[in-house]
Length: 531
Image (cartoon, rainbow, N blue to C red):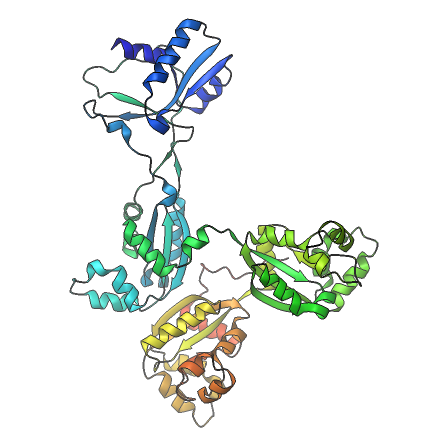
């Protein structure tokens, strides 16, 4: 054991921040031992360090230290200290929060618990699972006697599908006082203690997500798949763009095209924006108020012609856009170029400012958000989310329902509430109160009470109008002529059985949504921030 005694004397063990700080005050050269973290013990270097220390024989010149965590191992097991450090970055799980948890509004609580434990939600989607998806994900339950009932339950309402990564957890080392004497060697009755090198804040793999949910007593609401091969398969099914998106840093930003350029060359500008790889999520023309114009032109407030700039901005419509792109915020600001046309033409002729400069104005004809926080605040201000009621009527078969839900998602709506119910006489009359007194009013009520309907709350900017546009004309025959891609054109049979219904206005939508779903879902922030 003599050799082990010499090794302990050779190295100072550092296992806390205070000891690290103290080590930094050492005079001379300090050699920090981290070799075990890379390639295991290196006997040749140990011998060289010991030789140097003995020959120099001067404590102030050369020091050796090691960072470590203590692992108790069986001294007979040669491989006990060779445990590999798995990379948590590449460990994913798939979790499905079930429809009953969504309806009872437990989904937010579950997600918050998962994130509070240090897990990371890398991607999520709120959708109604198809029968095929349920049978695929729960294939291990197929032999259960009530499996068909379970499939019906899982396809009856919205679920959350989450991709969850382990994240990284820093080892919490206890603060220990610096030992005044040399550490004692382990006795023969004690397990040998291996000193394992590690960097400050050693990363370790987190425990199982399933085990965590069970400890929190919420596993009955959320099913987890942690097998690597299955996780990869389900990521490809539920999130086909996930692997591609992980290599990107998608950001939203607000963009504005000032009035002169908006009027003169809007089409070419929009094409240039899309050619640069941006997706236009939303857009609208708007005449800014004086307060809004001053906020968006604050970089010019010291200019002599600031009042003229504001007058122009408040006299004619600007085009406001919500853009999405890889590093969208930074890239959009770079594309804009300098604040003034003269500088842009001189120093950045390829910038949008130089390319689309207006002779009528010396300032950049574009605006972009200054930060991610500002971008989200401005997007919420100019494109406030709105709720509307949507109904898939009883006559629509399941395969068409899936197609309708897919179209809703592709149109940018968020399905924030959904359930399949047989509508009461009271609700049916509220939905169709605009038809009261019409000859076919009773036929409509009979149709809607002929079986369960899928009722939804759809959320999007300008949701009422956008949903009515997606539905198309009331008569499916007319819809096939005027709007062939609309839902009624694709899935409607006749005026009575035209597949879908929507609220006529925001007031009707709010009234019926409250009757069907109660108070607004706390998971969906609806209040707008001020600009």
